[in-house]
Length: 192
Image: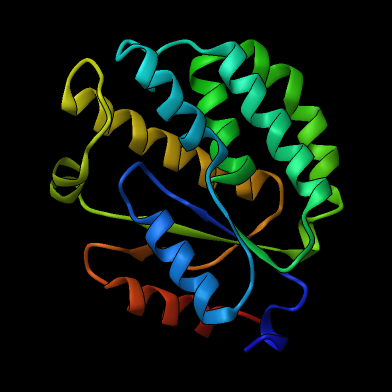
């Protein structure tokens, strides 16, 4: 198992509540490689403790700048192999939607940064149907449908960024159809 992942960073992308953390931790345990949590997720929890108005749809340039810069710094500190949640495609998708000035600044930086990682990166899109998205929604915001649509747009944008950056996308897995164990087995099956 370790030989298959020797040179890969496996990035899990998808909407809020899709199971990135669950699948990531299980994949990490199964392959015995490190797992890196979603930087933005941890920071968002801190912000929401201060005020529920700091929800995901709000314009947050300082937040997005911090997340992107911290993710780049973490890449430079952590070795491959590893599993990471949301990573640059997801973080940039958020910035494009709510902090365009930050996205404009960081896009060329990320494109250059990812040149060094492109051949060592596999991106696994995780998806779920609309009904499941409503059931799994835990984030505060204007209305549930606004949040669900926003997170779906972010997930789609993240996949499009992967293609733009020439990152290898694995076939999507629907986490409301497959269990976490089945998702991990599917990911492992597609590892080069």
